[in-house]
Image (cartoon, rainbow, N blue to C red; front, side):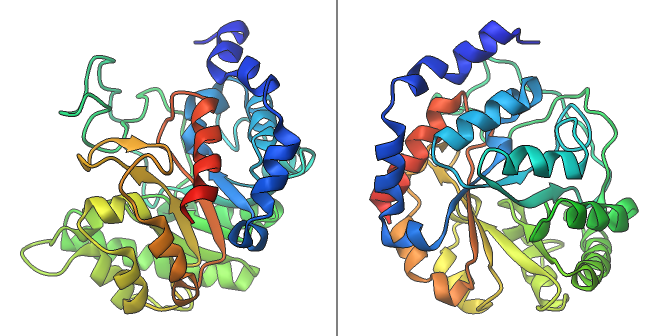
Length: 317
């Protein structure tokens, strides 16, 4: 485990201290789009650092200009070692809003982290979503704990509870997931919050030679109960045009993951350093029904990456 000195070194505290952050943030907020929608971040981006020192990491997120956060699973348990009410207070004390939380659709199946030497053909990370540590604590999931997760989302003042992933490898998997989404969506509506599903690339792979999980989930769930959090990079990796997805289900994409991917379609990178056409996607924001955006770079190497992403976001939209 990192000690505090190494954590601070990797988190780029020295670099942050040298930035003219007030002017940087003011210039960012002057942008038309960003004035309308505060920039959020999915905390999986800083997975390692949130597990090591969540308070110090959130301070750096706030200093970088992010105004909203979306939480994810972690090795501390709960919400980075806090209760929902405690985490809400922590985030709000730094001038940010805890907007959404990711929860798995079914019990977590740990996979070992690949060796540090593993790289893609382009010299970057492996060609799939990052593998999680095998020593994860027990986590709540929507299949078994949806009502508790909804109740905690309300306690935390969230706008959305989001399914981060779910088994979709077979028709049976998809049907079971659809049942979970429907009942979770109903519980969320009753509680006064929204529910959404976050995609990876695999949702666009045909199952049993037929339709894709994406098609089945959206066609067999209530559009008012089950929304989408579209991950732009994973959609592009799957060969899909986000704007065409928006047109196919207008108003059903209130949440976006602002993620970028390099031309090898394997290496996740900082926003603006890849091939995702953010300008085109944001031009269709009204069609999508966009409400909230979260920058995400799966397990980014350090806080420097989130500075690059928020700076580039202003340039590409």
